[in-house]
Length: 340
Image (cartoon, rainbow, N blue to C red; front, side, top):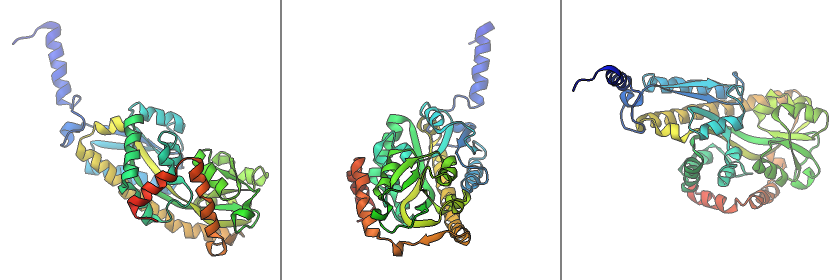
């Protein structure tokens, strides 16, 4: 059949577009012919020097190599992509954007996911890595993807235990009463800190140092590495090693965007993210000892777990689960991972 004029031009455009992969089918098996070149802009709030940023770049390099350059991940530190709220909304709308967030934030969409940031939920790396195999967690993640368009792709970016830094020594929930301790402004963080016996106060991350210095708050709760980077040893005399939250972070992308990739490319994106996250987590664990030593060298006094009434802290933590309706979720996950 012959075409002339406008029809001939349209046929030529369609032919060139198809040969370039513009109309490649999403979610199919296969390689680059099905995928075309895809760019994922991935952002976070941390600095360019942070270990997470370093290992995110390694993730990007590994994915590019494994897909022969078909999947390109561009990393944007220091909130260059915008505020977390705006970025997550773009992700929900299907944009080719990803973000490193936490389970408190994801809990604002699917409440049950906030259990991962609840007090004394998991205690070490081995337990944390089991979570991705939990049927209860998988169900919550499916709800996050199906109802809110957010795909959670990795559990393996872990910052470790959070402790209380303050100017008053304490060894039990009773002794922490009346102390105003800074935490992040999310229900699970607030209830977790309140369950320790103290009073949670929400301040932005950048206000922690001055907040303690000016006595707006009596202290904060952070992992050792973050506390050391913020020079909390200059404004706090004690670290109380409660380890009340074993902090896992979440790596999320648009569910709609992810489903457009061929299945083998989805697998590469996720498996390489897990691999880089585990390396980052181990690097942070190694840094923790150095951060602790630097803080003690600078004069901070450590009140270790062997000096604390840990049974009282763990017992009181049940209040956080009850306040947010997470007791049954915790029980379901514990059955899945074999934790008492």
